[in-house]
Amino acid sequence: MILMDRTFKRRLLQQQGQNAFNHYNQLLTSRDQGSFQNFATHLDSFAHHLRMLGIPYLAAGGDVVDEIRATLSRELETLTSNNIEVEQLKKDVRTLITLSATTAPTT
Image (cartoon, rainbow, N blue to C red; front, side):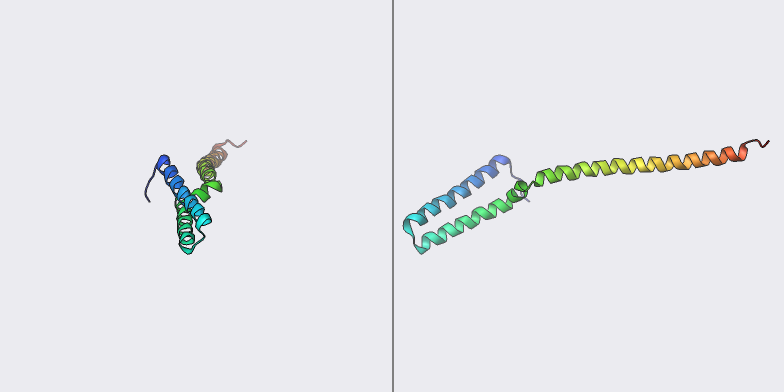
């Protein structure tokens, strides 16, 4: 995947959108087969670039989903480590109870 900065992405989308718009205006004035094909080609190219840059994903809240996923992953790691500590403490308590029961004086 090619990494592109925001300015490049914005200019690319602006250029693609402008091309589609210009060919649409040409189609409105000419109304011939060539103008229709040019408009369709540029509109398809614009849609392709939108998908390529992940605009529908971002519009659907994809960046928010990624943040939530990362937060949940961190919370899960914390809970897992806490669970391990709790299990170790339970073992230690059982060991202490067993030791105190065996060494307690009987009356």
